[in-house]
Amino acid sequence: MTNDIATLGLLTGKVVFITGASRGIGAAAARLFAREGAAVVLAARSADALENLVTEIRVDGGVADAVTVDLADRATIHAALDRVEQLHGRLDGAFNNAATIQQPGPLDTTSDADIDEQFAVNFRAHWTAMKAEAALMRRTGGGAIVNTSSIGSRRANPALPAYGAMKRALNSITETAAVTWAPDNIRVNALTPGGTATEMIDAWETATPGIIDQISASIPLGRMATPHEVAEPAAWLLSDRAAMITGAIIPVDGGAGA
Image (tube, rainbow, N blue to C red):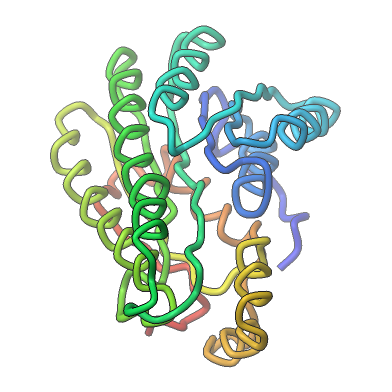
C-alpha cells in the first residue's frame, strides 16, 4: 500500500493528540491526521524528532505542535494535556499509541523490572492519558479515543508475556471506558496490529534474529504492515464516519489472528 491515497478531510476541524508520535505508527499517524485536516499535538520523549516532524507537517501546510512526555511519569502526561488545552482550548481525538517492548524471553525469565516498566508504560500511562483526555473532551461535547494494543493481547504470548498481559489489560480498560463514557459522547476503541515494520520490531529482531521472517510467514497477506497502514484505521475511528463504533478491539494484522 502506498501513502498517496487521496485524502478525504476525515479529521477537518478536529484537534488530535498523539502519543509515541516521534517514530513508527505514531509518526505515520501524525502525518496522516494532519493531511486529513486535524490540528495535531505530538507527544514523545524525543524532542528533536518531534520538532523535525512538526516542521515537516507545517511545511506541508498542516497544523502541528509538540510536547515532550515520559509516559512512565504521570505528571508529564497531565502537563501534555494541559498544553493541548492552552494551544487549542479543546480536544476532539486522541491516539494513545506509545509503547515499549520487554526483553523477549519466556515467562520464567521475565524480570520484575520488565513487568514494572510494561505496567507503567503500556498500561498505566494509557489509563492516565485516557482519563485526562476524556475530562478535556467533555467540555466541548465529546470526542474519540483510539488505543494501540497488539495482536499479542489476543492469545498466548510466550515470547513477550508481560507485554501481552499489559496489552490485554489495555483491551479491557478500552471496553470499560467505552461503556462508562458513552453518555458523554466519548467513543473509545483499540487497534490490535500484527507485525508492523517499526523500530520496535527491529529491536525484537536484534534480540531474536529471524523473528521478522517468522512473523511475516505467519501473516496470510504475506507481509508485515507499514506504519501508515495502521494509522489509516485509526484516522477513520477518530472521524465522524465511525460515529456508531465504540468498545471495539479491531485487528490490523493481515489475517494473522484469524
